[in-house]
Length: 192
Image 1: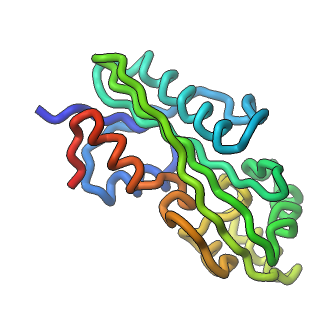
Image 2 (image 1 turned 120 degrees about the horizontal axis):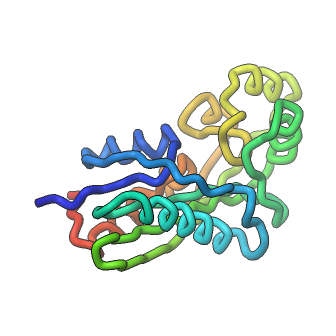
């Protein structure tokens, strides 16, 4: 019998990525405050948040394999979370304009029956084109920046802001599939 997979995230992008792999899974969003942990190296912040989300859901989920993830955007050693409002989105996009930044996604997988846990992270680099004030305003009007780390979504109209990437595209969307596949195989889940 296949093991029950549980995604500890309300992110529609993560849901779409898991569905794209043809995996059968259930969504149980975590109640963890994503703004509570921001101290330390960004990759460790992302991993700790992913671990907390997975642990929170694992306590409530019953048997299964719980997947927690958290994506953060970093520029100038500062973590850019989700914009609080349009003005915050404007500041983020202006700061990213014409520059490279890093995207980290922490992933935690918990096998509830055995108590087994593994966690890791993926890092990608993204370069924005130089944005005009008009492009920033037009992008903000789409509403796309408001629920995304760094104020953009590469899988939507935000793709028009991105000049190039280095690393895993799916990491930038919010769930590095290659790394997740390797982690799930650790618990006997064959994705391919």
